[in-house]
Length: 207
Image (cartoon, rainbow, N blue to C red; front, side):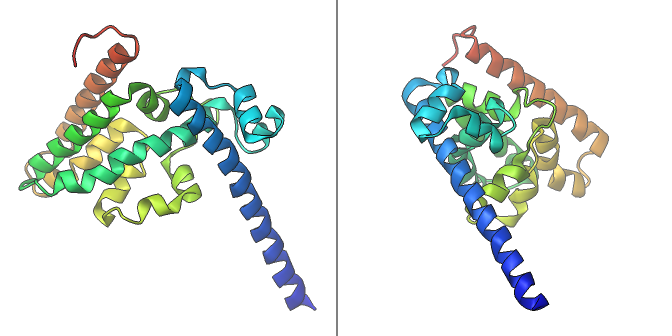
């Protein structure tokens, strides 16, 4: 009897998790659709609810707030970068070239879609911020094609820390002290953040 109850309990939990993922997908897909057709700045809870076919209040049963939902939807677009990164790194002959190519790839895709990358790496996610691990738990297949060596970096939400992780091999080889790498990583992150803000606010004439 206990064994049957345990099995039934596990199945109930699994069904509930499946239902949760299904509901989240409805709202995420609706948000992606709005971003593609109208732009990220036009996303509203009401529009998402209407497009998904649910009362907008239902969204809050699955997401902390609108910024969390936009984060998950925006990660659909960030996948272009993560898919392209392994190909970029094939050209690297040294740890420093690898580091620079990581930035080159990231800059290419982030400056093509600055508002998307701002939503993922810079926007205020409230008092209970989500992170990359939360997203990849929801969408684990996005990690399947990625080399194992890249996963620690891609699972880190803080862009400054991601940059430092990209320096790891350089540090391991003894070519740079970790403290120096941390300062450089922070500097590079701040440059990227400043330029991204200029792009978002149309204050830059750069292509």
